[in-house]
Image (cartoon, rainbow, N blue to C red):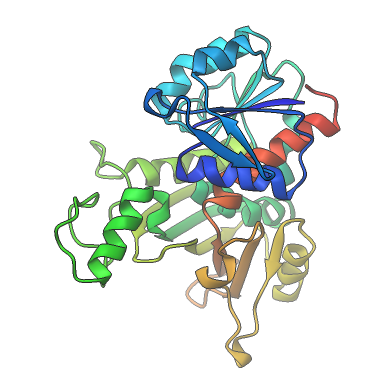
Length: 330
């Protein structure tokens, strides 16, 4: 199994290499790809060093799978070139997510839609992935009517420069170039990605559109507010879910606890609930604070946390690759 990792020096790319190694993905030849300034440098994988090559050299090498985390413009330009060479691309950018001809996949929820003909597969937005891991099983049982989600997103979702900004501000150093329009330390910015003409950010629009595609269901309504917080590992979400059908709280907990990849931490009497500190470095999605909305019927409140670099990006992409291999689709 020849695997290319495009964007291998970036924050997500580095985690992809780590996850491939941890999960013992059957890589027989690794092809690390990065920008021109990184060509010839080395990356480490399984105690060995691999030389970074150009993206065109990677296409010529004809890997079986290419996992992309190099930005939308790179994906738009080069993913089709890999696909034309017979390579299956798993793309972590937003470039192909809402393309009607491309599958948008969270393996535990909808891997069954994949076929051998799918040569460009989209990895969802990090906040979307952890959300649908909870919405998926509950929608099957109770039928979603409306979802309201507010996110509390880690600076790692923006990248290394954002982490550097936070750490510099913690130290009192105000000289570093700012990624955000304001300081992030001791602050919360209701501003993830860029604003559109409708005054929603791109992040919020992704959260509003992607779950419907993944669940194959556009009959429910969804609205979102995305907030950046001074946390370095893990996104959190406060979610209000109105169902068409009545639910039982114990049954909700049972459904979620039996969902692969979901861990329920919901013991408020002993102050046990999901937090980013618990999720960092883990592949599971954590859910807690499960309770009825006292203001209206058939409505549930809960809190979801996951490591945005792992399940929210790298791990989900590798899980897609694992499914392809296990089902002889590559």
